[in-house]
Length: 69
Image (tube, rainbow, N blue to C red; front, side, top):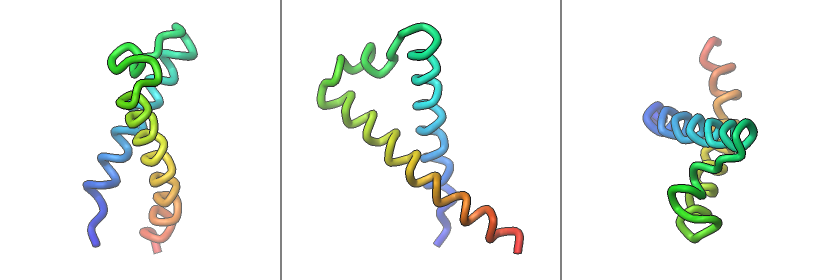
């Protein structure tokens, strides 16, 4: 199974999440809360998707190590 499109999508979403955390850390500005409301259903879905993508990307460590063999 070719999972490259899923890998790139998950990576892009995780990077967006990392940028949001950077904005929170440096400027106390939560972009997700600004766009979708503070802990609304939609913002919680966005946070959940970012978290799931981060967990999915953990599997890339094993796949990257196996691709060189």
